[in-house]
Amino acid sequence: MARVVAAAVYTKGKKVTDISLDEGSSWAAKAGHFVWIGLHDPGSEELLSLQKQFNLHALAIEDALLQHTRPKLETFGDALFMVLYSPIVEDDKLVFIETQLFAGKGYVISARYGESPSYAQVRQRSEAQPQLLQHGEDFVLYALLSFVIENYRPLLDRFNAELEDIEQHVLNNPLSQADVEQIQSMRRDLLRLRRYLAPLGEICEDLQHLDFPFINKHMRPYFRDVAIHVQRLLEDLTALREMADHAIEVGLLLESSRQSIVQRKFAAWAAILAFPTAVAGIYGMNFQNMPELTWHYGYFGVLGIIAVGCTGLHFNFKRMGWL
Image (cartoon, rainbow, N blue to C red; front, side):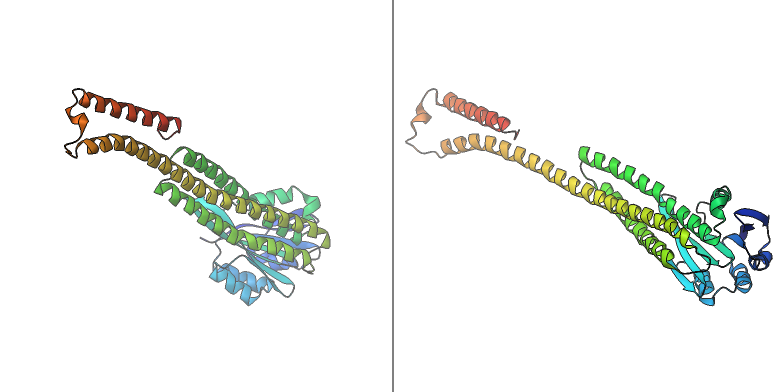
């Protein structure tokens, strides 16, 4: 259900007052003021109302109504439209929650769809830093963008811990189908994370070079800082994908090693059993001129040879580590 999470007007880094959705444009037109509106699951009625008030571009509204586009930054005259995604885990499944940002001279509008972490804490942190909030719309954009990117770090830490557990499990246990399915599922989630995270770096790069009335050149280092965080997250994602690949490789190598050990044991026992079989086969050919057949102790002698031969083979295979 659509609702206005917060709507307020600010000047010189301080909150002036809370406002209704219909009052936004009048306050935004005042010199030195800007409005910050936060919406949750807005519908067409709210978006069209804001379009009329702030003269939002029709293509931006069209994208906002369609939803589920890729992360992007688009400019329309002296205004911009951004689409960002925050990752959350819902019922053990990775889900991406869409956030749309409209920004221009005198206003910043955020529209959040779904149950991602609330931006109320972003507003609280910003209001607690009036020396930065006095920069205006560009600082609010930085704060929102930084908050979205912060949501990726706990998820990457969770994947890292899970992969370490999987690696330890694979080292101590044979690689099962369930293990392979779990690792493959994580590799797929990591790929999805990269698909939604990588464009954020490009967005930050673009914000550093945009020449907009409401983006001060002194705020560009802040966007560069966010871009650096995105790059580090992407590097961590690459490392996690390599960990997932290595877990499968290590599992396969260990499984091959275990199979090799079993095969060596089978080969060793086959060789031991082959010796008495060969001796018995020789004395089972029923030739007449076999002196041992008529020897009184021939049977016990052959058994002794078999025992000595098998014992010697067993000792040698044991020494070689085959048994």
